[in-house]
Length: 163
Image 1: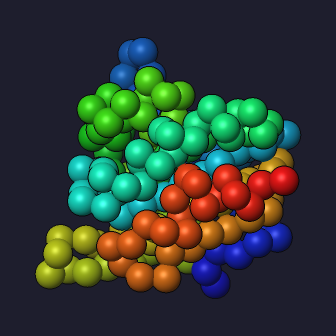
Image 2 (image 1 turned 90 degrees about the vertical axis):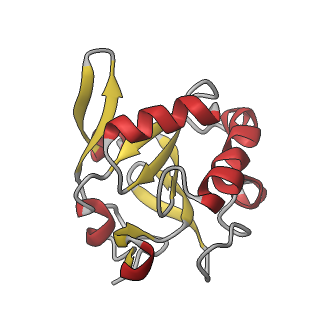
């Protein structure tokens, strides 16, 4: 079943780049007792992801913090080295966005947000969405209806839904 509001997110082991290299982190440890924005996208360095989705959260990072969001997570089915390099090259890491690697698409598949387009090289990638997660529960979900678009899943659209 695809991700939906009211759903408690399943735990998953993800990777983030730490000072000494890739670190395994339990997703629930990042979410428990916190207000977190999670936005997911098909791939690092891909067109819409790089030119629209990540920049929208860089622009809105401070406004999310002002609304009580503890952390912004950017999740993609890529390795942690690629995610760290992409975070550095886009300025996302400098903006305080945590780049999260779902290397085997385990989390993405568990929440039913995976898709494949083999002719484009996308196998078990994440659909584009943004969500507000409060203590591990999805309270707002903005899923993009079509590939290549970043309208309702962008930072400004999610921010507009927070009270």
